[in-house]
Image (cartoon, rainbow, N blue to C red; front, side, top):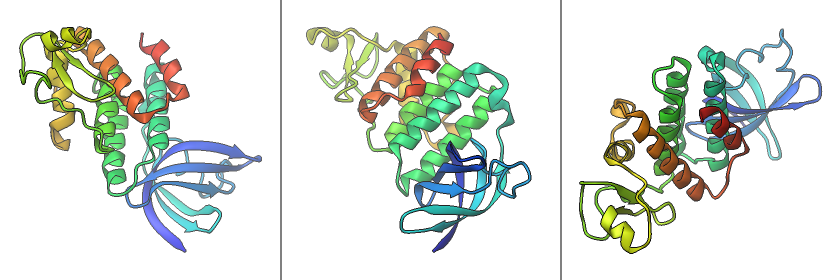
Length: 247
């Protein structure tokens, strides 16, 4: 069976001299693995559309034991991703994390849209990499069905005032007073809490439309990373390198 779909190349694995196995995030098939024969040769018809982070149109033959890319045409290439080490490392990490999460339709369409928007923001340096990392981590895990309860303190119902604590295991929010009764140290200041709620609850068109101080961004980033990794139940290898370049 042959299918036509769009997709973002999340991973490339070289096989032999010129072949590669692609991991592609598609809106209607989820994450698809497919062999792209000869695609590493410059003159091959698949070469330009099968690069890492290429968003392309694909014709794929779906077999019983393997899938094969028959045709591919580029829709979007994010040329700016390679301008900085931080941008490249962040893109690699997010791609690995999404491939591990492997969303199924209809969530895969939403995750694909999020990834494309995030890669554009990285490529064009529209937002700080640390903030983009936090946005994509938390929004992706929310789309996977693990949205934390961020509206009010789970203990007393307080909405704001002072620092708060997000429990990475249970996804509950605690005010500073309730957190202390459980021997927990608050991990969100007012700015980070506002940003967390925005990431979880804003519509797609407004997702990236906020600013945050450097101090609040650091706190937000630490909380989102821990929550994401906890729910993913896996620490991507690329995260260790990304941590070193974002410090």
